Length: 249
Image (cartoon, one colour):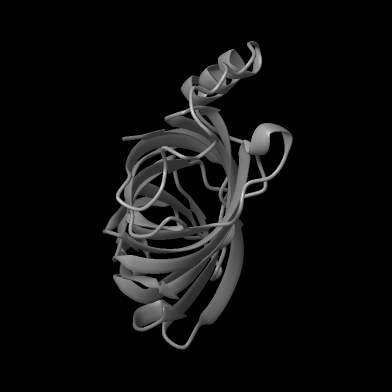
């Protein structure tokens, strides 16, 4: 399966926090901009965002009535909610390495890689991410802005889609099949900028484009087709925009 999200979604909590910041003026800095942040500094933070995401679903029949069938479908994955917790450490004044735990919830559109249509309910994914960031020189009023680039590598454990309704062409009756896809990994290119809100806190804005490195796989069995089986491969891909807060110590 390949899912492409074309709808907006995100965390009300994250939006509320950023709205509260936008409603007031940034405090005066007590030190020179960014002088408290550099090699040896550690960080913790949180973020939320909006996804424009999809997945390519490829299916190959391996037995019974599906033997020899092959097909694929692009599946939109409208996001429902998502958020991340992150931590990092500056190994130099410009380079930070760390980890992120990210939660995403999607409400997928119907998918038809073969003759049947799959209708899944909302499902969750948890992403364990190794992250790197390179921060460029500051710019803007009071030198409060710092742009950054980065690369993320993500591991996503087994994805449980739960009970998925399978609608067959007549005369076969519909049925519900439990689907659990295997683990997969992704790479992402990240770009954004951090605004120094106070000496030890930034507001961060950016986006990343994510592609599958190792696809998730699952073998499905369809009782109403006499136990016919199909191998399905899922390759997610898409753009995620984010905003968040980072605290430095």
